[in-house]
Image (cartoon, rainbow, N blue to C red):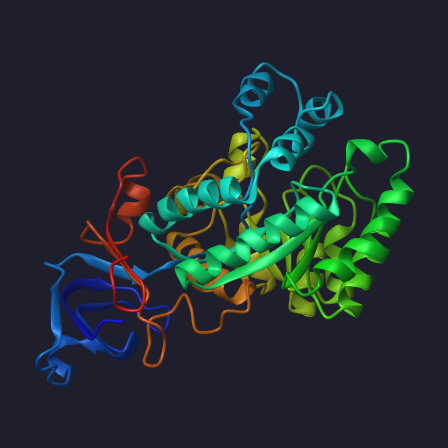
Length: 394
C-alpha cells in the first residue's frame, strides 16, 4: 500500500459533499487521511506525489451485479435476437443459460479461474475495484461449488472486495426438465446447506420461464435460515411480484426491475432493499430500460451494474453503463455516477467503498477529462487515465 499525495486535481467528486476544485487527496497505508482543497491541505512531506495535471478524479466503481465466471460463447444468440427471436424462445430451444451451463460444467477449475481473472483484470483497468460475482452456470452441486471456490480464489489473489452469490436457482437444469419440484428440493435439501459456507448471499431468478414466486420464497427462506444474505433477479422479463417478495423477505437488493411499478419502488424503499439496475442488459435485449428515476424518487438506494454475462450483457465497462443510465434510462449524470460508485457499495454492504473521505480506502479513478461529465459526453472514448486501489496502481 502506497503513501501517496494526489495533487493538482481539477475536479474531485467525493460522494461526501459538493465537488471540490483544485483538490488534494493524501493517502497513508492505503487509507485516505485528507480530502479537500489544496489551500487547506496539511504538509505531505516525503510522500510520493501523483500530479493529475488538472484531470478529474472520482471514486472507483463498485459493480453490484456480475456473472463473471462462465465458459463458452453465445455470440450467435445476439444475431438471433436481432433477427427477432426472443430470449425465452432461444432458451426453450436449448440456448440461453443452459448453453452456458453445458460449457461451464465441462470447464476445469484452472480454466474457469484463468477466464475469470482475464475478465476481472479488464474490469479493474476500466475502473472497478469492488464487485459481486454470482454462480449459476453449473446448476449441479459439483459445478456450483467449483464456481464459488474459484470466486473465493479470485478474491484472495486480487485482494479486492468481492461479494460472492450462489445462484443455483438460475434455471431448471436439463436433467430436471420434467421434474422441477425435484430440482427445487435438491436446492433446499442438498445444495444450499453445502454452499452456505462458500457464498455470502443467495439469489433466485424469478421470472417468466425461470422460477415462480412460491419457489423463490421457499429457496430464499431456506437460505436465510442458513445465514445467507438474499438477492433477487426481479421483474426483468415480466412483472411477477418478485420485487415485493424481495421487500417481504428483507433482501439486500432486487436486481433488473425493468417491469417494476411505482408500488414496487415504494415497497423496496420502505424495506431498505437496494434497486440494482442493469442498463446494459436492457440495451442488449432491446427492452425498455428500468424506470430508474422512479426508484430514486421513491427513496431507494439505487445502484447500476454491468450484469456482465455471456448472453445478454457481455459488458465490462461501468463508464458505458453510466452513459446508458443517463441517455436511455433517464438518470441525471450525478445520480448515475453515484449509483455506479456509492450506490453499488451500499447494495453490496461495502460501507467504506464508493466514497472518498478520511478513513476510507484510497480507491479512485483519474479521468483523462476536465470534468466527469465527459463519461457521457464522450461515451465511446476510454477516459480511464489510471485506476488506484488503496493508493496503488494495479
